[in-house]
Image 1 (cartoon, rainbow, N blue to C red):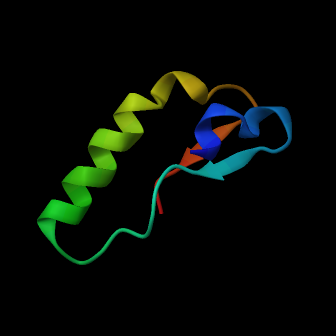
Image 2: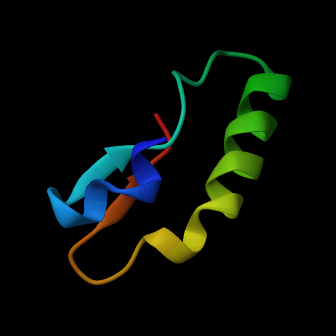
Image 3: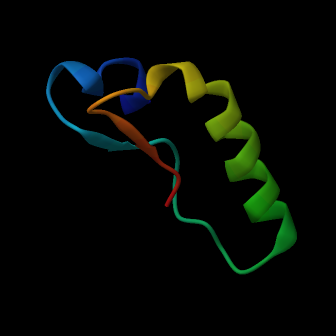
Length: 49
């Protein structure tokens, strides 16, 4: 995933695929973003969708 390396080259990066219009998709993306929360910080953001 770009969350592991993108802070060296950009300010925002996708963490996974598109969020779909169902609860399972939303929860999956929330869980993934939680795993990568430590990769975000000043000048760099995780983009869940």
